[in-house]
Image (spheres, one colour):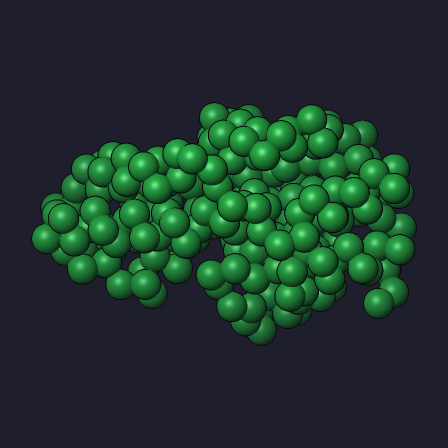
Length: 218
């Protein structure tokens, strides 16, 4: 693959890209919804992936109706989620090898996530990898969430690199939209969401995992 511009930095999403949390959180939401007497279809959950909670709650209200208690679902699902991942969250394939390659190339890197900072500290810090990122942009660190470009633009600014010379790695549709809106070269590494025609038109490549991305960075 030929890069349109030199890659001077890499910006990672977190959930579903660096750590295997999306499937666990969906499991927790389905279980809590069932506890509340509702069936939460996977198709509805997929519409929530890549969104901050306030936007995900709108999806739930659209599906269940205006009387649905989104905060009760969130509280119960969060409790279930932490029970499932308290020990450790699994890293996605190729994370450490990818970071090693960036070290070899001397490329700075950041995390731009819709999750809160304490989640980053738990999920990434639990593997001892926090100090391998030069900047972290979490929910609350930027004015507008994905699919707005703010998380990626602020990540590039923190790294001191032009967004056009940054490679963004994402697993969600909203994340890809945000990275592309920031002007970054973007690769999608699908997790729970399959790439559609829009994603294929926005991304330089659809990669099977981070091992494939690492091989592209020679």
